[in-house]
Image 1 (cartoon, helix red, strand yellow):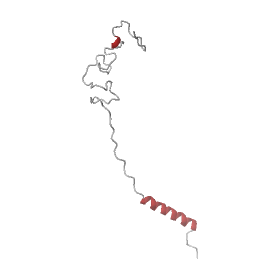
Image 2 (cartoon, rainbow, N blue to C red; image 1 turned 90 degrees about the vertical axis):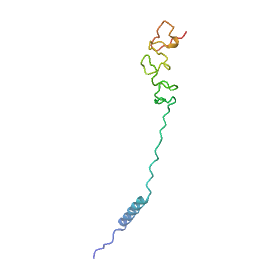
Image 3 (tube, rainbow, N blue to C red; image 1 turned 120 degrees about the vertical axis):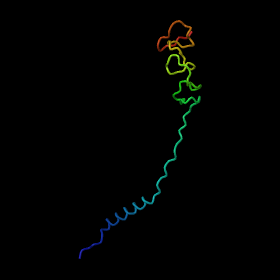
Image 4 (spheres, one colour; image 1 turned 135 degrees about the horizontal axis):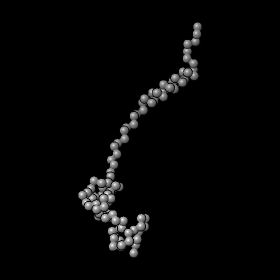
Length: 103
């Protein structure tokens, strides 16, 4: 008559596998992470986040932008877009690109 008992190594491997499956099934499932609130600073409450606001210190919705560069005149160093800083607009020589004329 043939020996029908399982091989001891195979029996041990099957027992270990069964134990691992049972332990894995018994582990609690990790709870989902709570939602994260993202706060975007808008100091002047104009609806434009400070990171993208050309003039974060004052609301610039509906304020003039004479040269159309996206920076409102109140915060634009060259509001008229003539290539000269407004502070030095009385100086007759236009600025060379990349240089600032100070007197």
